[in-house]
Every structure is written in C-alpha cells, then in structure tokens.
Image 1 (cartoon, rainbow, N blue to C red):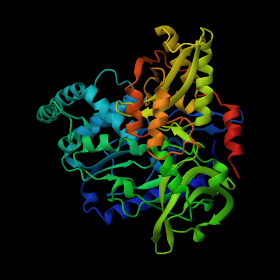
Image 2 (image 1 turned 120 degrees about the vertical axis):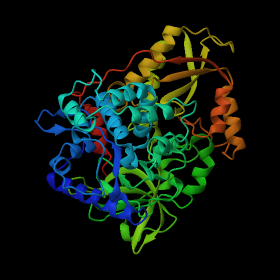
Image 3 (image 1 turned 180 degrees about the vertical axis):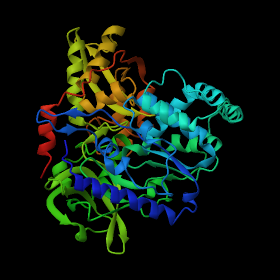
Image 4 (image 1 turned 90 degrees about the vertical axis):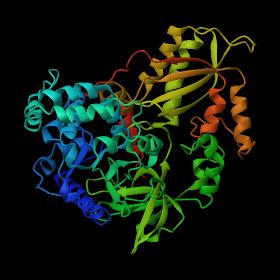
Length: 517
C-alpha cells in the first residue's frame, strides 16, 4: 500500500491539467466536442487503524479534486460523474456506453486508462448493443440498472425516444465484421487515448482493428507510487513513445543497468521477452548498485527507476526498466522497456516468476498424489480473446520410467487450474472475481519432448547452450507455435478464485516494503 495526502492530489490534478495543452498543440478543435472516456472505481477497504485503502485511480476519482473540478471546455466527458462513481462495474459500463452512444455526434476522442479496459468495453458493447439500441429507441433505461444515481443521471441524457439514432447504431453493429467500429459509431473521433506501453503493448493490434486506423495515444506514465511523466509527442507510434519525467512529482534516481543489457535481452527475447528471468544472465550481472541522478543519465543507457516521494517513500524501487531516448531541452526522456521480474500481466495484475512458481508448486501437489510428475512448464499471457487469460504449458509423465503420456482426468486438471489461480496474489484474484478483466486460467498439456523442442528453437535463435534455462514465460509467436503444435489436451478453471476486499496480505505487504532500497 502506498501513502497518499491531500497535497499529493493537488499534484495529480496539476498533472492531469497539463495533458490537455500538450494535446492541443497536435490536435485542433478539442473544445468543440466531448471525450468518451470510460472510467471506473474499484472496491476500497478500511485498515485496522481506520484508514481508507483503495486503488490510486479510485482515490482520485472519489476525491473533491475530481468531483468538484472546474469546467474545462477542452475536457468534457460524455459520462456523468454518477456513472463513473458507480460501484457496480457492470452498471457503470452499460450507462457510460449508453451515454456515449446517445452523444455520438459530439464525441471527439475515446479511451480509458488502460488498453485492456477499453477493449473490455468494446467486448461489452458487442454483447449488449441490441439492448442499448432498444433503450435508445424507446427512451427508457433497462430495468436491471438499479443504481439510483446512475438512473437519474442517464435520464437527463436519454431524455426521449431516438429511433433514427437506434437504427443507425444497429446498422453498424449488425455487420459481419467490427473492423473500424469506433470510426463508424463515433465518426468525429480524432484518436483513441489509452496506455499502450509496457504490458499494454500486447493489445495494440486488437485496438488497431477496432479503431480503423485512428492514432493510439499514450499521454502519461504513472503508477501507484506516484505520477512520473508525460508524452510530449502524443501522436507518435506506440513503439516510439517516450515520457518526459516531471521533477515536481517526486525526486527521481536511477540504478544503472549494464551497457550490454540490450544485446543480452535480445538474446533472450525470442523465448523470454517478458522479463529478466536470470535466463542467460542473472540480475546481479546487469544491475549495479550505483544511484544516478536525473541530470546524469545518458542517452541509450538503461536504468531502473527509483523514487523518493512527497508522501514518504524513500528510494523506493518502482521496478520499471527505462531507456533514455533523448532530451526535451535539458529534461531526459525515457522509453518504458519492461517491468523487473514480471512474467505475466493481462490487466493491472503483475505476476512474477516467484509468484508463478509458488502457484504451480501448489497445483502440482494434486497430480503428484496421483502418481504424475510435472517435468517442465512455461506460460504466456493470451490476449487473443477478451478478456485475456493466463496459459500454462505443462509437460507431464508417470512416476514409472515411461514416455507414454498419462491418461488425464478432467476434474483433476480443472482442480489444478483453480489451485493455480487461488494461489496467485490478491490483485489477480480481484481482476478475476470482481473486475472480470481476466478470463479463466488455462493449462495446455504437451506431449513428451516438447520442452526439448523449445530449447532447440531458442538455441537456433541465438541463446547460449551453456546458459540456457527453460523460460517461465514466452512472448514470441514462433515459440508459442512450437508449444501449441504439441498440445494434446486443454483444461480451464471452472471456478472463480476467492477474493475478499477486507483481506490484507501481510506477506505481500512486507514484500513491497522490502523493495525499498
């Protein structure tokens, strides 16, 4: 958990306020319409000391800084605040999309905080457009929207029957393909504003499909620890995004990553491009314990970000690896490279190799009791479906010395899927149970010798035979095809893992505290 103060909310408000002037230098006429930004709040808890603990974006949106913000003609939302602040995410999503469709002729930009959230909204629209059209046609909100504040706010926008608008939306949505649907439904839209750097980059191709060529704009770089910087060239390609850190947000320092980090990461990227998993090199070899100030970073070099914040974090290792790409005047600009130690991420979840090992270790106890052994495993984040989900590749064998693949029991393997999910951290379980931003975990059982084939592939791509270790996450399509071509069975979790908003995990809290330098 990260501390927050009223003064910190002042800084965040300042941060948000400077994003619009930057966009105005590249896109004209943003004051001539509205933004359909899909924003949501998440559950909060009370700590034993009586303090409120909640996600950083929820904290901002529920504060007076957001609710009582002054009118800004460049930043008018189609969503009433009441729909954003609705605690029921399904009702919130429905009402925000309905308001966005009713005001389609005024929409100049669309988006959400993360690419994954925006794509969930598109999927939600695919599932509910007929009901939305019915509401627009009749001028009546659907009965299952029960939140009083949402109902009252939406009634001011959905004030009368609009059959012509309903017919228009229906014609666009009923088509065989939804390619370019954003342009079709909101024809005045100039760009899509979502974060597509870091783990969100995996959604770029899907966003491009739905957006019909609209620019994908990443405006800001921020985290729960603090807000870091802004993109001064917002219309650049997603792969070229660099952020300029704002020195008034925190005191920034950097741990130098060794100069040949890029070459060694390229050596690993074919099989393990998601993380620095000590595959080929270990962490101690490429992280030096030397702190560099913001003014002393060098172009082309890699650094791990360290922050000292106004709210009490001292030399806190954020876990982000950045590369210096250039300067704006004297201010260095950084490209996000990757998260330290993170192997899997779909939404706000960040699963490390250690987290994954712990979960797999718990799950394999189920099959070991039946005389089966898990000989190798790896994983990847499958985002071809919405929502995305974790995929684990397992190679199994009997305890007896035989290459014959054991007969697998459906119920047992589904229990393994569930045990993995139940053993992952609370953020993952919240995304699965409450937010529904992650789909059921999948285990794909592969035939004997599959991981030998994966090693052969990695060696053919330049990995060192002496330093090769099985990657615990894969990111390249070629490596995925090697594994998928040898899959003999697939199993999904049938139950949703438990999650309680009032459960604070002491071990996780201590782990976070120990990340401070």
